Image 1 (tube, rainbow, N blue to C red):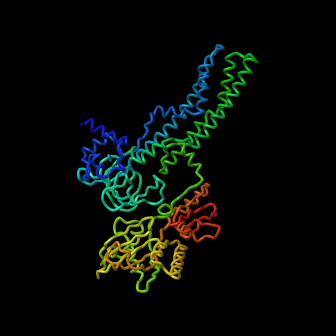
Image 2: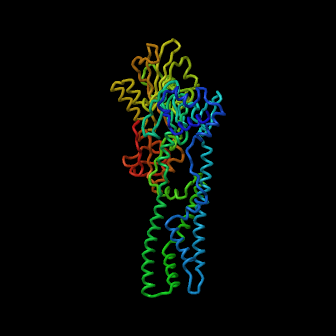
Length: 560
């Protein structure tokens, strides 16, 4: 019986059973689990069989790692010179050239020691950092839900996936509403895909909408992500290694040609003694290579690594310092990177499009179309502008909430008011709400002018629409939408954003901002007054720090 069980687990590990395609009930049968999850004992047993839910890390011998720093073209020439000094420089009544041998050997050891110590310390620091950032997941074990490290997941576990979660392992979704899953990191698909109950979700993808339970079918290197990572698991030479290799190859070729010529001249033509010839060859070999260069480079990068560590940066590989120094383009996100990601509404600039509605009522409608818990930045901003956040649900009964997604770019709530009438309110990207409300051309032009006015002052626009649902059904399309108004949102820039951009530009780094906002918004949120046509000003709204040509500072405007 035990042999049969081991054979079954082997089939699952070796993908002899396609757990992605078979019916969900058969998945439970093959994995010998239920919707109540595994017990702790069963989890520990399976963990020994399938291993931890993380990618395998290659454990490199510290001795081989140390010797690896002596394995490059420049070191080869130095090692050859050391061998010649001790093994071939004999005869003529004189001892071997111990001085050169010891000097070359000491330089090699110093170079390798510095590189080894720095990279080893950096590797330990990085490992400690990653251990503190170990991903967590909601796991059902022993009939109870708890938050556990994702590394302990095994096939057969039941996990919970909700908005914002990174899927910790490959799984099959259980009963419930469909999820929106962002698989762009795995498949390159730009938009989230809908995953229905019974379908598979992949480790490393992100949940953008919904909440559902799933049964784990693969972990670690057996996941879709793990197999992809294994295929690209190769370390390419960086620019620094390529330069050293080129220098070493040039030295080797030059020295080899010189030694051949010298041997021909000294022995067949000049008939020199063996020891004199070897001494001359040794001089050519040692003099033809920059012996101290690897040591100087290692010390220089070690100092750079130490200075970076004082600023909170961890250098896992010392040669990466040179790679970073060669960076000439820096792509930066705007929201939360150059700005504080703390949105506020400028109430004085709120624009209302309906006569029987005031600004406060427009804010309440926008708050109704916002979540009161598990909020994103915009929801928190809108609800927070009310005197009491409970006003967003006061006097109404929520029937259905339509969460934000990157395709529709809006949220919506269907609710019943105190009179028993059904309504639906939506807030979101202005172009989406304008299209939803089918505005007339004059109203559309007025809305666009207001949006442009907001943008000129560095304000993003949020539109609000409302409709009546006479059928009293959450799935009903409802009556025609009414455009209620526009709210201006402002995300203050970080105090150090302008200075950081200026310093990057001074260092010759071409800064590129990636955002979905309009150029006018970007200009102000970067900390500037609207620039002349050919210049983008980077500074603060009250104190301009610097001005750079627009050719030097690009903004990638992604259509939203």
